[in-house]
Image (cartoon, rainbow, N blue to C red; front, side):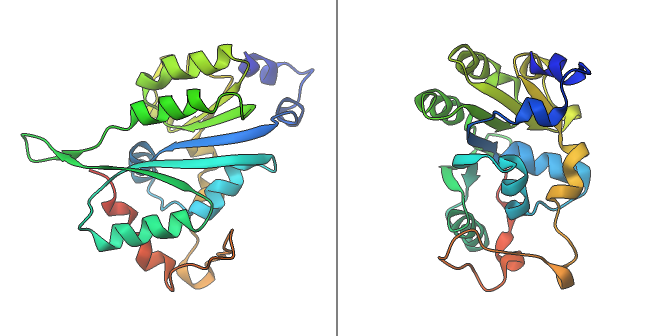
Amino acid sequence: MLNNLENDSIFTPEQVLENRGRVAIFIDGSNLFYAALQLGIEIDYTKLLCRLTGGSRLLRAFFYTGVDRTNEKQQGFLLWMRRNGYRVIAKDLVQLPDGSKKANLDVEIAVDMMALVDSYDTAVLVSGDGDLAYAVNSVSYRGVRVEVVSLRSMTSDSLINVSDRYIDLEAIKEDIQKTPRQSYPYRPLSGMGFLDDPRDADGHLEIQD
């Protein structure tokens, strides 16, 4: 495992990461939302994409989330995401007997990781869900390097054990959180433009169940 290599004085973290090749990013929106809530931060999704790509060649960044089609603020946030480097995979929320709403996208994440396995060299999975451990292990056997990024207190040991590198969100929160509004350093990743007020359009507090 590369976790062990990083602890070996022969290899620096930079040397371990220098051959990441093509990178594909898979973000469990619900898991990231609750992790950010625990950390007490708001995610800057432009910063997040840059931090996870880390200068490597990005194949695609997927963002998986449950949606409420009647929530205009949420739809504005997802539109912003689509125009700024993310491929959004949305699934309608289902109301449970207790009144709560949920949308499980583990299957979609696993299927996409496997379907594209020949197109990328490194997978960055932003989730702590142990249900994804089997998919991670499967793509690893196909020669893919897998990096898991999540909040340690919300992460299954089984997922960490099958990854090549684990990154605690606590350790990188300064790199991915929003700065105060008056000095918001936003730069679009595409020429398509964005909503006039990305903070008002964000609405990510409402995108999860």
